[in-house]
Image (cartoon, rainbow, N blue to C red; front, side, top):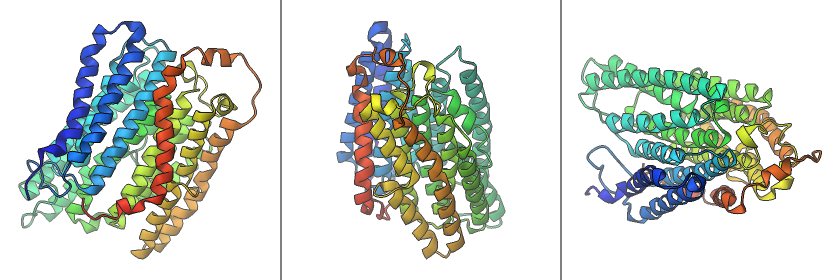
Length: 466
């Protein structure tokens, strides 16, 4: 079985997109930056998606660093769709605020490259490079509004905590190298170094759980999500979580450290409780999605405990598409500087923009786990897997708290189409041309269709090749 360089093509096309976007930015007039650059980025994302026809899922690891199994292909395609949603949301947000630069598109694409590397990595060295490549552009995206105090605070908090957990990851990686003599996942542990290896896996796992926003290391999530723009929050909530949990799943399944399972169960329980209960009291949509991210990270860690990667990644894809799609749609009517981002402020906005409103409701319904959308089937498959492996109490616990969480998803969906008093804001919202909304509308429509189709095709995730 030979390695295939074609497996890197999707990542290469996104990297080219980032370089072309950044290189062309100075040569495009300010008034045209939000018209030209998003289309360039989107065209390369399409090329990246099409290049998967050259991917060989049965190829040997490339350089011993990268693998591309069937599940990795599905995860990578989900990342590209979420990146497309992020580009569409950024275009509307930046055009509405008359942002004079176009670097955010290049930053979003660079972060996407980092996540694609994380998804394919089976070695700590490329995984760390992917983590940092994903993190640094997002620091810049969070702080796009330089005069916004909340954005500045969010950027500082995310940067500092991100740097700390990067060090934690490197320390864990060094312990694993000392215990195995290799940086590959699942290396053979040398005699007498089992404890060293377990400590390294634990530290590396917690660094990835930080990226995923799991409790008890979730303290940054709400502030960072609410400090960023709605479009950036949707991109970050989906893409970064896919990279972190894909890498965590690959590491966990190859490490064989059974004694750490109780720690992961504790992380899952804490994440689900904090995420589901804290979200109920929120009125900010970004903070609701932030605590949703914490809760869903807990659900996906339960998939690790049951050692059912197919169920975990099916859940991960439906969550990523649902959160990215919902926030991308809401960014269409969140107003300048996201001033219409609270539940009271978005009342009736779906009636003014029915396409975006319907798409947001579909995505929120999938996040809530309502049939017939794929979010319902993802939870069913996950809980069924827990029951079949003997974790009946955990399955019942997760089911109860998923019912509780339905409440705050429905609050957002109801607000979008609730009757609202007529104001003069509609004139301001229609100031942008319809072409500015085209990419966003295409993205949220494709996402809504994908959430329906994935409910009909869970067989994609039953393949054991990873």
